[in-house]
Image 1 (cartoon, protein in one colour):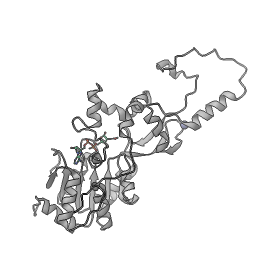
Image 2 (cartoon, protein in one colour):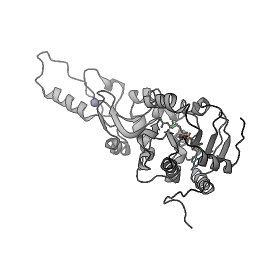
Image 3 (tube, protein in one colour):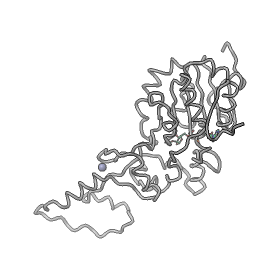
Length: 305
Ligand code: OAD
Ligand code: ZN
């Protein structure tokens, strides 16, 4: 690289000068709101599951596990349900970049949908891992607003598809065929493997439109990154992510080497060579950056005076 960028003042100058900024975000930008991240020691959602004795906590978001036993997700996901009433100063910072006409795209791994609340435009937002904004039946693909399954998640019970249930009820009410089937075995209400008896139709399970491990990322992730952004952004700012999950973890390395890479988070990462690392609370860092850039960042969580 011809020019070296090192300091927080360099970062502030880059924000002022550059026009097409890519912002890549993770769970760290929402922790100040009380939403846990995944991998922080003690507080992270996965770290807590490990403490509970679940050694591979990622199974909560594993599509094979979900189809095998949706209770794994439904009994454990309550802690990460979005609150939806507040966004953080870091969300406000991304919004400020948009207001200044500098935000090209915010790639978020977060499923809390708070970018929308902060007013990030749809065309500038890629939700790499989907979100809780919608839910879809695994069987008939019926879609509902995500909030429709929140009560079930809070109550730790599996959410089933209403149209599927109706169809089953209608089929059972219809006149029976002449040939009688053997009576089904009496079953316990707690499910076991032979619960999934082929003769007894089961309604589909509702799955939030989050990208589970084993599922493809949304199409717009690949098309927007490759066709629109990878060769046109002039600065990348990565905030509040451990960059442990592919393919998002590889995005910074796929951008041209001559565009400055800035990292803002509590813990450093190894596999990407960032020009500038600003380690600390991301809310504090963006407030400081805006001050140095001469920008006014307003948000209820920023102390005034
Ligand atoms: P992680 O928990 O892996 O990383 C969050 C990072 O943010 C950590 O490095 C923290 O140090 C940092 N952090 C936390 N709070 C912070 C704060 N207030 N200020 C600055 N830094 C802070 O979360 P992600 O990288 O987002 O997938 O995880 C990626 C994916 O893993 C998630 O999207 C999720 C999970 O599997 C799905 O939900 C499908
Ligand atoms: Zn259905």
